[in-house]
Amino acid sequence: MAQPSPPSGPAREIAPIEVTGNWVSVLTEDYRWRVVVPPKGDYTSIPLNEAGRREADTWNPEQDRANGDQCKAYGAANIMRIPGRVRISWEGDETLVIETDKGMQRRELHFSDGAMPGEPALQGFSQANWERSISSRGFFPANYLTHLQVVTTELTPGYLRLNGVPYSENAIITEHFTLSEGFGGEWLTITTIVEDPQFLTEPFVTSTDFRREANDELWNPEPCMSAWGPLRERKAGSNSIRL
Image (cartoon, rainbow, N blue to C red; front, side, top):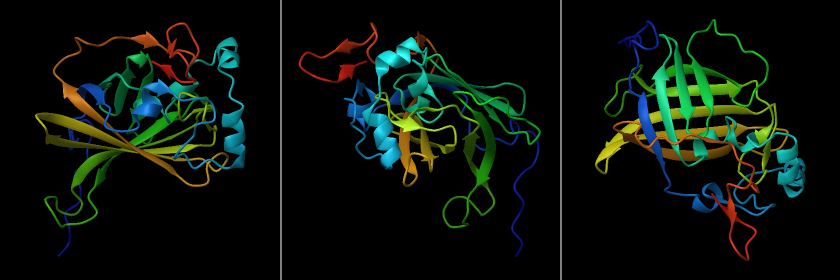
């Protein structure tokens, strides 16, 4: 028996999940790398190759500040890992916009095949699609749209962590956005896969959770900060810095 085709039409109209609204990140893992800036050379769990380790070991945050590169850890590969709040909204019927309060970044997720990338940028160019389930087992029938997939390219170099662990302009970032309910609220989970043959030996995969908020009362925009800048406080006797 032939399976029904997934719905067609403007991306906003056929959206299978409601990702728009206000979300706050919930730190369920990787606290030591997300909230506290790790020491230089701490790239535990990141599959760096020799070139990547060399870059991470020679990171110079003061040079980043001098070059105006304070936002390199706020690029598309890591921005959703920065603890803070995000707002997601539609801009027309074919573009989702993600805004972050930490780093004050803006991402545009383009559903239209006609959208064209511009010059390489910190947030790159993101092509979005509503994706379908691959099996008829479980709650959803085959070909039923279930989640959001985003593929980002056209990047400028950035950091996978706040302590200068690099990714290159050749990186490809694939994200899967899924919704769930439980523990008294609605949750957005973003699974991020970073592929970068220049600095990684294999894909680097993370999963980041956000809880829906009723409004943006706690929205608190802050610019990107250099790891050793005046808005960070170094813990006495430690090479790590708390945000």
